Amino acid sequence: VKLDELYALLKRRGVLWPSAELYGGSQGLYDYGPLGHALKRRIESAWESWFLGLSPRYHRIEPAEILPEAVVRASGHLENFTDPEVTCGNCGAAFRADTVLEKVRPDGVDGLSPAQIGELVQSHRVKCPSCGKEALSVPRPFNMMFGLDLGVTGKEKGYLEPETAQASFLSFPRMWDVGRRALPLGIAVVGHAYRNEIAPRQVLFRMRAFTQAELQIFFDPAEFAPELGPLGSLALPVLRAEDRLAGNETVREVAAEELVRSGGLPEFYVYHLAQSYRFYRDVLGYRPASIRFYEKSKEERAFYNRIQFDIEVELESLGGFRELGAVHYRGDYDLGRHAQASGQDLHVTPTNHPPVLPHVLELTFGVDRNLWALADQHLAQDGERRLWRLPAYLAPVPVAVFPLLWKEHSAEALRIVERLREAGLPAAFDDTGTIGKRYARADEAGTPYCLTVDHETLDPAGAGFGTVTLRDRDTKAQERVTIDALAVRLAPAQRFPRPGPAAAA
Ligand code: GAP
Image (cartoon, rainbow, N blue to C red; front, side, top):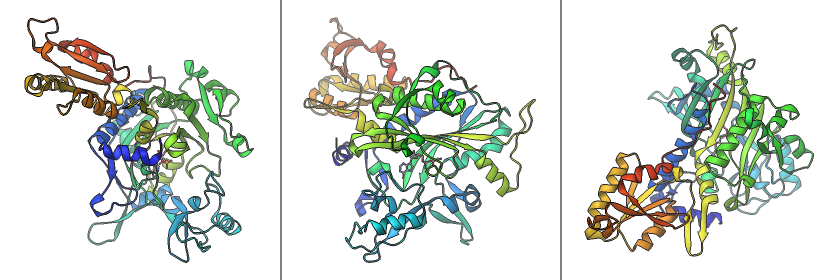
């Protein structure tokens, strides 16, 4: 499916649309409609169930999304959170350097200095994509944070958070005090990140306001050793930086234990790569062959990272592999910087242990990009029929109830909707059009179960009394199920998968 087609479908179904459409929209800003909002909530719940399921010591918090200037100065974002930008001297249009160099350097410009990028623009005689003139400037670093004035005096500066992670670092001392004073300690945040992207594009892939789900695991590097156990034999599709830089772009399937034994990666790191792989493959259901871990070299990785593997998934609508999340080993960079800048010692002393400045492993996840990827990979065409093969627990509307005849069957159908909602299932009611049309609408929305109330349901003399027709989205198979058994029968729509016994505890 092509990007435009997929976007048109998502708009038509009210999954999402451009913000402020009435005024022509604003680049990189999108609104989610009922289906999109519900799907996002479900993705977030699945993420939380899985990653907080890794240890009973991991907790979610809900911090403010505005950071005082001192925080972003200490974190390095004021200085380093930049993208190289080129401006056209003829028409004034501005571009990210990697977009004007797309044909020359398809892998991007990470790791190149502004001078090197400038040379590439010059030597390849790159023209302005807007006016076609050879008038592009030498790149300059453009800071992507949105600055704000706090209060009336304008003296106090703030920034919309460029990543949710900072709030976890700032909350660490409190979480230590209110918690069990033990490591590892995990702090999860699901919230908005705001970036003044130079060139927003590809709908949910480069937005100016988006949702991140991040888990920061604070640990003692001398102690943190979640065991791979049975995960040791799990084959992980990796593209090592070393191979890539030597010109070999082949993804290799390497057993997790092998990545530790001869791959030079710490076991705690590989353990989390493996758990992330299971999440993308088994919970979100991406095709295994479409997932890869793309290692960033020292020059390419984010300024705070010691080890970085991006989690990339191949998407037809975007013509290749795209980053949906990552596993970042940030070392003691963040607590070290915040300790220095705030003048507060952030070492902690777990019971019977020497003081330690905790290190951080960050599991980061882009909710919007994954929503798009779930549409790209799971929307299928079955002849004339279009269906969204989402796992039942991700479906925005897990069950829809139809009265066969509006007049006779609506009251009972609404009663069933109410019962299912009481049981925690957000059931929908649809009485518009033929049953075939209602099935088609539900299939396209990813609804795994449709229930139809008919005369049999209400006929006390018949064998079907108190039953409804349950129709399965994927097989189209129909069966009669008693109303009393529905909550149990539909339970797969409510059960988010968990990673199993908490090895990191
Ligand atoms: N705390 C680490 C961090 O923020 P990042 O690679 O800059 O790392 C993490 O962002 C994730 O956020 C990405 O993997 C991606 O899924 C998502 N993301 C980043 N920029 C985005 C944008 N402009 N639009 C949509 N999602 C974005």
